[in-house]
Image (cartoon, rainbow, N blue to C red):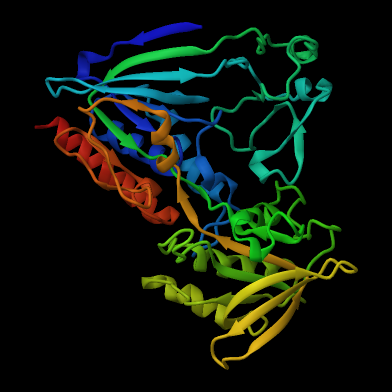
Length: 436
């Protein structure tokens, strides 16, 4: 294990951004393009871009995520200043506030960097790798080799090694196959220590664990999936090459039920509205209609929430006569074992009757759970670090005087567009704080 102490005090110490998703990268760019200040982005995964890269398309324009992400990576490459540094496969372990209020000492643990910048993404290493791993980018719906390219749009663009599946001691086939000396399976983890002037938490979100909703059958019935899994099914680089096929038998589906508020607005799970789920289901119903013109999706909802100009997106979906809307609560899902179809017990809120609904596949609109809620449990902080997290796990009161800010879903549930806006706000707060 190596210990690397970074000293960048020449420009008032760098800014630390925890999280390398859309909001974290956007905040870094806004800061470095406005002032001469170094920014370090700490990201758990081996690449930056976050959960946005796992989407098929954004609403309301339905453009692919590569579009916006490519703009950001181009901005990084063209800046020329080198003021944005990335620590991937890394976590923050400790934050210590300085008694004089001049910033924070931070300790970061970085996993071994088995692949260096010599990697040309030729793929020869993966061809000889004997070990498979679940593909978390595709929400474990397929597998990759234990040495793998996380995503086509990975940045930095190079392969990764999953230490949980790679047989380091018994197999060096990938090292032997690499012509560019890009692989070192003997690499060790690093401890990075630095002093920073400001911290932005842009830790993002994860889908709520819908297996806790036992009545809806996720994890029990193969054809019950989540909205994030649906994004990967629709994506051309997903597990089914863009065909929306149900998991049990790879049958192309025509009749899909979308169930809203899967965990959200529920006192026993997530008591808040997750803000984007209605829009996500609307766009996914449109995906299905685009890919299979014979399809007829049904959206079961409590309320359809499409604020502001997003109302136009709802109108677009409602204008398609094959997209059905049912204001009703799905109380239970069971399975027809002979066909794999799903049987929904629905309380229709308009008629007041209980109805049965048969469908080939169910998509649960899983709520947004803030990562910061769990991440803070693993970070050792002292009393001089003031971070206010509410009962739902969001940062609700930023510490301007102390230089601690938040962006994206660390603040509250947001879509991609509003995450970018929150990143600009956080960047401006950093600049103002340093101008005091």
